[in-house]
Length: 205
Image (tube, rainbow, N blue to C red; front, side, top):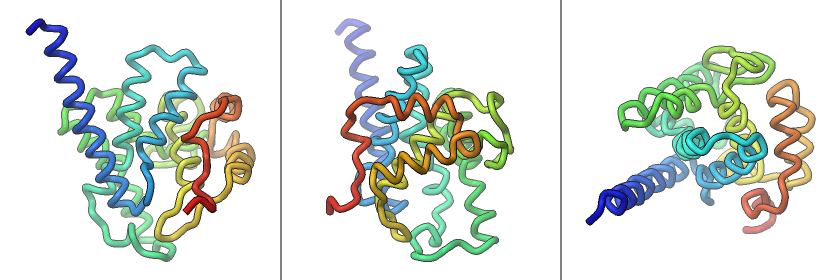
């Protein structure tokens, strides 16, 4: 067997493990539909609008699939409860990007993947966590993941929320441009063509 064929088989095996992990994360968070894989598709479509290099897109895809692995590793019961988090629970939950960074490192993912995971809850305004980064100090890939994750969560159901329509979700990301989201990322997102992963689950179950 030639080296390229061996490398291809190893890559397929690695992708299967990654997808299985993403599915486990989705199930832990209570998503009834594929969430992380959906985010990966949306994020990659936005990344193409910025002409990101292939290796940067690959890191973004991997980070999208693993972005909430920290929550699964922490394994807190409050994730599945149908109520708002207490202040202590919220503080605890905000540790998950750092735990996710550490867990992705343990699993052999590159530093780019680790940092995208760490910073996928940072806000354009600086009001995010865990490091209160703002504007361009947040890597573009993390800014893209922030929007893709939010949109996918808004348009799917979880134990404590019901999905909203695509129109409502697009309105949300537009209204929060310049606050939670990078305005340029929002513009690129809104310019996406037809994409199955953009469809809301509202009224579909």
